[in-house]
Amino acid sequence: MTKLFKLSLITATLTMAAFNANATVEIYEKDGMSFSTDGLVNVFYSNSSIDETTAAGIKSDHTQSRVRTGFLPSNIGFNFSNQLSDIKIGMRSSFWVSLSDTDNNRDESPADLGTGSLVDVRQFYATVSGSWGEVLLGKDFGLYNRANILGDELLLGFGQTSEFFGLVDGNNVSFGNIATGYTYPMPKSQVTYRTPEINGFKLAVGIMDPNKVSSDSSEELPRFEAELMYNTSFDDDTSLKAWVSGVSQSSEVNDVKQNQSGIGYGINVMFSGVSLTASGYSAKGLGHVAGLDQIVGPDSIESDGYLVQAAYTIEDNRFVLTYGESETANAGNVDVVGITGDAVHSNTGVAYFRTVRPGVTLVLEYNNTEVDATDSLRAEDNDTFSIGAVVTF
Image 1 (cartoon, one colour):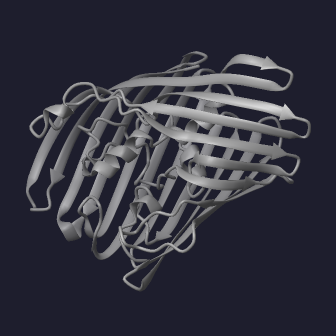
Image 2 (cartoon, rainbow, N blue to C red; image 1 turned 180 degrees about the vertical axis):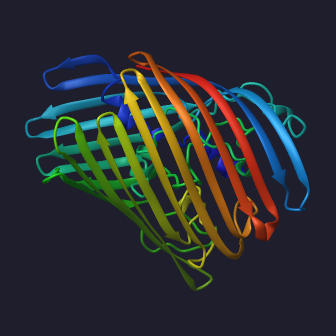
Image 3 (spheres, one colour; image 1 turned 45 degrees about the vertical axis):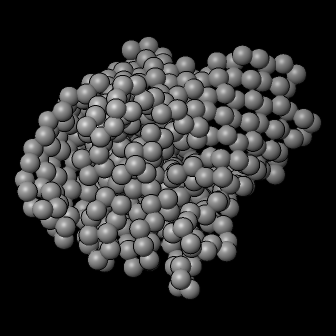
């Protein structure tokens, strides 16, 4: 559970790349050199009502009201770039904090009481780019399922708070649609090359620090990830985006080779204020929450998921309908949240976003999260209402 709590803090950090272009403060810009900063703060009131069946088959209910962080952690980032003839160098660093203080563990340790901001650095990299493309060096988010989470209409919202992951009373962020439609592309040390855009296509390929399957496992090669994006516009009002991504890693444990792999995909069409998105993934040997960073066993463990969403924007108002589902077949193995065998996690949501001023957004949201893990007797039905505000600069 500790690993999942750490994961939840930085769940949506990569999504800020989408905001940075529109919400930055230029501090210095002269002779091809620039320095800027960007930031985000969000806070939500949420009320969750959970009906749960434990692994012992005992039914229980739990209701909790919180004032806490939503899907995006609050954060601040710094950006530097310098144009040197036909080469441009850049750097980005950012750190992220949780506003979700909790006394959830007050009976276990006094150290868990009070403020626990959990400052975490998840981006610290340099880029070198030119007409030939771009090379990224350092720590950034993975490529596998990156576009799936970037395309989630609930990025500025709340999403699911399954009790299976300790999210209702936890001191970190909510999960959006992680584990109910896509896996999280955990940040890794990497060297990634991105091509220039060619006829709407852009390819990224990277080698990344592998994930240890166990303390004594051998990884002879790094893990490999790739992403192919396609963007096109038919007129000023209609656009299409499509993508496919993949990941592969091999490990050896006690002279037995294990292969982990996954593929992600999706499409988004926008027209007349309407946005329609469908995405999905399929994986072997990977967890359904954090992919390679939640390896739970050999490639007999399979996970599949999909997310379908519709959004409509009119002036300063955006309305969202969403449904996501992930299904895991553990083949008798036990995963990190104690689920044995098969399990299905799903989330149904309705959200309303109101832009009060540029950089200030109000959010009203309802999510119903369901979990059915019949082999381990566990089940959950979670209704969460939330209202909050997101401020960016």
